[in-house]
Image 1: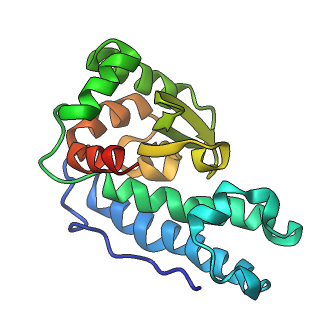
Image 2: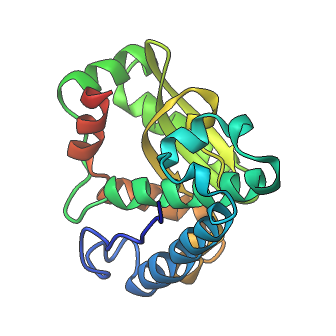
Length: 201
């Protein structure tokens, strides 16, 4: 199977003023597209993997042939991570989750404010490039961080929400002000989609 770049679920400028139009264009059309191109090139070397989904590949990297394992980890992770990132954002969003997801956040972190604090701390403390995540881990929820394009799926967790803290995700607008980017990002979080994923898993 050949993986494709899906269009954004909204216009490039839809997340203004929190994430700028130019960043969205470059991030989606150049960075994300490059991960997909390089993933497909790697998989061409092993046609026997053609029936596997990206989740199947990432959940058992040791089963991926060694000569393309790093490429699948990096470019497959970059493909999957960005697919989720675009989906868990939407214009005129933000606020707080409702229903079962909200109850699980309260159970895991005490309340939503505590969750936000832990998530922001995780995003800010990631040295270099990587991601902050809200995941299903065992029977509950957890906040974790991964380096580069690593994905919690590889560690048996189910990603629900993610924030890209690679510099290319925010540098055009925020320069070195990662904290401002992280704080503003809450205004575009698509809690309806996060809740849908929570209930589906």
